Amino acid sequence: MTNTEIPQTSKESKGWLKLFAPIWIGQAFSLFGSALVQFALVWWMTQKTGSAAVLATASMVAMLPEVFLGPFAGALVDRWNRRRVMIIADGSVALVTLGLVLLFATGHVEIWHVYVALFLRSLGGSFHWPAMQASVSLMVPEKHLARVSGANQALQGLLRIAAPPLGALLLMALPMFAVLMIDIVTAAIAILPLALAHIPQPVRSDSEATVTPRQVLRDVKEGIRYLVAWPGLLGVMLLACMINFFLSPTGAFLPLLVTDHFKGGAFQLGWLESVQGIGLLAGGLLLSVWGGFKRRIITSLLGVIGVGAGILLVGLAPANLYVLALVGLAITGVMLSLANGPLFAIFQTSIAPEMQGRMFTLITSLAGLMSPLGMAISAPIGEYLGVRSWYILAGGLTVFMGVVGLMIPTILKIEEQARDRIQNANLGLQPASEKVASQPAAD
Image 1 (cartoon, rainbow, N blue to C red):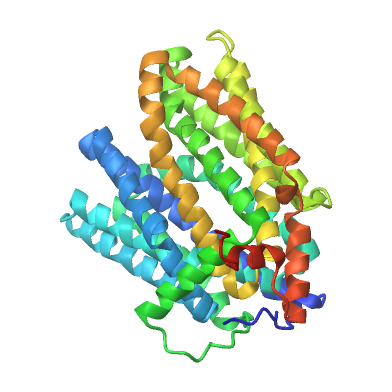
Image 2: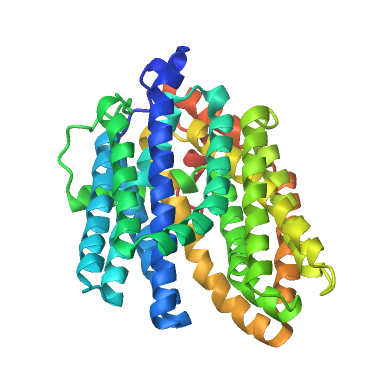
């Protein structure tokens, strides 16, 4: 059993920013280093092999830990000291990069070395990401969580804009191993504030229990029961999975849309990716200043509708109106920030602190699993009807799902359900949904 008590921390005082800002800045440097490594490795594999199969295999290898090991990593994150988890994860990823540096410097690197490195880096991320997300709610006051999420979205947009051209310039000026060494430096910058900071831990009544494989499996099952027993959270997760199913192929199809429909080249493709990054940055800055509507799920669902509208606009753009596709992806970027930022804030404020590691990884694992399924379904449709048809279908259905989400009371009331669960937990009562779930079915 777990205790849902949230420890009293400096987040309730005005000094919360002094604790959080150095950690956030350090993690921003780390993400920048990781983005450079990602770009450099993809470019190296492209130049060495020119094989779409190699790039697809690399993507799948990097996805495996998140999809299949994520829930178990989340269960461990909920038990272990999250600050130590982040330090060890950052350090481990840096050691993997150091191995690549030595291989590139000595000229002994092979494709399979890169596969192994991508897998191990992703494995480290499977521990680091939920530990960081679950720690934010214990460091940042609830009223500022949406703004912090907006800052995170803006950072992602900035990385999408800056990392590719900067990575290309560095690869022109420096040898590959020197570019990879930047990731080691940025990892050290991220570890330093973590080593000096005190990050609060959620209170668990079983925190002293020995961690065994059976206990980890029990924790994962407990997380699944927690999710299933909460109608609003379950509804949001299913909605996210369906949206990911439809939208994931649109990113993969973008080069084909440029060449086959707009008859463009690398320049046109680069501009489309850049304007989406600019949109992410703009949306994140807007959210960090505004904070969104008081009921955050409204902001998120309106963002989903906006994302669908942007993708639909891209699909409907005639071949002679490439600028319309630019507008569509700019809208998509802005609305992605408005959709994702409040959603993470809802998770951080609504999910019990000692369950957040499991919930974050469970939701991302299930949503991530939708990507290969979406590609498997969309590929033959794109072949027979053209990739433009998938943009129209995905955009229209995403708008539809956002509208449906606004009409489902259990999704709209997810934050109210969270408050009820906390009050019931403090009174020692069982939520009504869990009572129903635990009762045997009538004959």
